[in-house]
Length: 322
Image (cartoon, rainbow, N blue to C red):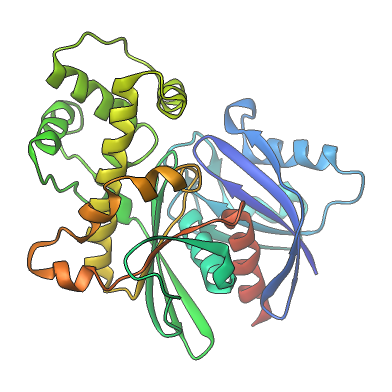
């Protein structure tokens, strides 16, 4: 059957038509991306997508959300939209739907995609074991985390809010980042440092350490400067971001006891080359007495261009195949 797959993040909402059969995704169409800020509500964004199609909209929706899933009312974490699940069938004019946390959706993508959907980042350059736990994490507007357990050809996904765990400083620069953020946030979570907006916090902390004046920039502009390479402080902040993400990914690996780690997220694929060249791997394994264990864990970057959409469709396929 056909289903409209939707991936709603803090900044963008993506739509695509998927074909599902036997609990799996057999085809994912070309995505359509909309800016959340350009629509007051999700149903209005859905209507805008429908207007672009030259065919009837499938009467099924697979919706991934950057938020915990509540059966009555969902307030997205980094997005002003509010979604009321009891009204979805009426407001979207569908007969069936699924709701899943956005990184839970990526967990489903990890459960169904083949090994050629990844590139090696650090640790042993081997395929993920067929049995065991995989940690899925990555930066976008927020920091998403999920866990996938695979056994006997099947998989199970646990969506989590692990991105909101405390950020654990390891050196003087981390201490300086925490000192800068604590007056504003009191409790500094991993997401404050290792999500898209976190680059601004790192940049301003490094400027303070260097004694350099700086102009406050929004994170979109700062990421552009960092990737272009002309602003040395922005490049240093990007390098530090990669190191910090390695530390957080390692903490999550310890918590989940996985046999592998997958880096995903809106920034995950864009950061691919930077992560491989950075100190991500060194910080990932820097876990004291557990460094030897950490060195046995393969870490890969998912390269599928739309794992959230694919995973939303996969979650729908599994739920409605029962």
